[in-house]
Length: 318
Image (cartoon, rainbow, N blue to C red; front, side, top):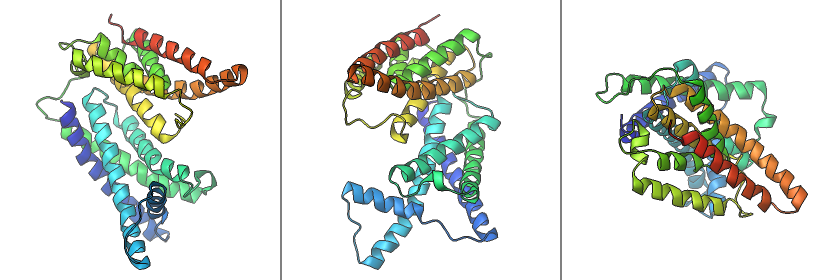
């Protein structure tokens, strides 16, 4: 299945998942009963305010526009998360429903609750058990519905990709290395895969194995190495920094496994876990280096070298 087809399937699946989320949330509001949350419209207002964008109209008109913008933003989030899931599935990440559904729900929660926390519209640490239930259950419904729709759309497709044999221990070790490299530098794993793959390889590796793709990936990696050392760069543990690392760590690990003839599902999970662990450990290690040397640069340079070594180990051909 092509990446483009996967993205289209993901958009459809994300829309179905968003419908399930809204339905579960609506049933909860009827049964409790409870008033609808104003957090989405407050988030839109906060983002618009920080961006210097004014909401036109009178006070009543602005309030109405913000009230309508909240659900639209939620729908857009659901569709985007679904599109990413569809693209990853097309790249080889095919998880069983018991894993893929909850994982998609957690991703949608992170995409929704992360901005709320970052803009201080709401602090999840102060939520009650009932608040968490009202958030977790609809997002779980979203994840299950989105995953089921993706599987249904893929079934019977003429370019569906059959699963390979179970991943070998060496493949899982290399998947962890690619994930860790991506956790340190988000583009490291995919760049290493682009430089070690060929157009005739299986799966995503064939698309990124072209010489032009390798050149673009190398430029992006070099740019990230420079930008990473700037003081204004936000923490990689925030949603904008962490989500791409998790996605690229998972994608590069799945692409490596598929290229080498293994089923990519478990390597993709290992790559995602490796990216999360390396992102957390990298922040702590660089903070320790900064305290010791009085500057973040030595720790950042050491991380560059380690990320490159891990990426090379993970992406090298058998």
